[in-house]
Amino acid sequence: MKTKNKKSFELKYTNGSSPKYFKIFLCISIYFNLFQSISIYSQSDSLNQYLEIAAKNNPNLKAKYNKYLADLQKVPQVGSLPDLDVSFGFFIKPMELIAGNQTAQIQAMQMFPWFGTLKASKDEASLMALSSFELFNAEKQEIFYNVRTNYYQLYLNQRELQVYDTTLVLLRSIEQLLLVKMKTINTGNTNQENKSNEAVQGNKSMGMNANKQQENKSNNAPMYNPSMGGSSSVFADLLRMQVEIKELEDNIAALKNRERMLTIQINTLLSRNKETEIIVEEELKIPDFDFENPSLADSVKANNPMVKMNKADIEAYKKRQIMNRKMGYPMIGLGLNYSLINKSEMSNSEMNGKDMIMPMINLKLPIYRKKYKASVKEAELLENMTTDQLSNTENMLLMEFSEYQIALRDAKRGLVLYNDITSLTQKSFDILLVQYSSSGADFDAIIRLHRQLLDYRLNMIEAKVDQLTAIAGFQKLLAKY
Image (cartoon, rainbow, N blue to C red):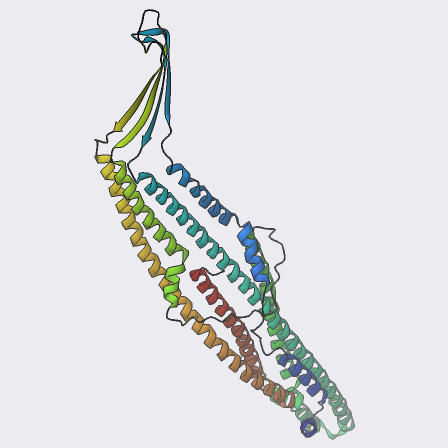
């Protein structure tokens, strides 16, 4: 079958063309088809390594974690009893008592808040620390999302460069073909002009009319007619192809510049040298993810760090109300008074010279109620505020969740679509190449199909990256590493 086709092609080249065009086109077609399919199922490990580096090095993430550790230190502060109040008094001149002379006095007093006040304070501080921890988790997921998306964009950029490089090889091959074809036509035209000049010299005596007839025949030769594949038509095709190559080279330069920008962004998130090379896997595996699961939205509301943070704040403000309410109750103090007494020569008492010990009780009465009522009301309003924030956070998360679902559906559908139409467009492109090699016509259709084919290949890669980006969004909402 191949031999028959080759012969049929050779029979068409009777106007000075050569079968070597078909060898060139065959090599172009085979080379270009090698890059036709894009695999999406392979494992990547470098991304996880970059996520770990970001978790360790990112300064904003470390700041949030230190804030959480600082809040933890508040728990023992607010959960402890007030400091013991100890006082010491010394009499410069001993005080004369019946049972002796008092020289000094030592007093210690420990105040005790109302029952449950310290526990409420500790609970509030613990919940505030938990809120800070969830804020740290939210920041971590946001940084991970930024690392993932920039990593996927860098992958997209490199895959687009591969497509452009492969297409550039194709266009330069077609350019070489046009140069060979133009050289062949010009060589044939030169031979024809030499024969025409000899005929004119031999028939010069036939007069001016014969010369004009010969010139008219020469002017109507095929090499001057673009529709017949003449040199002017081939030259125009060559110029258009060179324009396509220039545009493609400019796109490649822009992609290389964008690659450097993405590298700087990723290294900034990793808090390391901005020029450090980012290793991107050749192919990225799209993880299995059931984004249509009805319970997924509930999982987002249950696991998202921002939701957990708001819930912790609500519980903390409830504990603050209890604490502030109990702060309005009396505070009890227990103490001891110890008096140092020396013997007195004037006293005959049995207690003469014996130190005195006096237990004491203290009661602090919060009679000015406005400030306590205001503190309780403040905690109630803060609880209401955070409850509204929680509702708004859940609404925003569900809206974002829906956007990622739509984006994932579109990406999956686009991946299948562009894979199919790329295959069909490639076949049409190959057919037009063969037709152009045989007849030299419809070069504009080749240019149009080339651009469509390039767009479809790029769209297919973009659809895959959009799918990965949407899944990264779900991972952020679900707080999954």
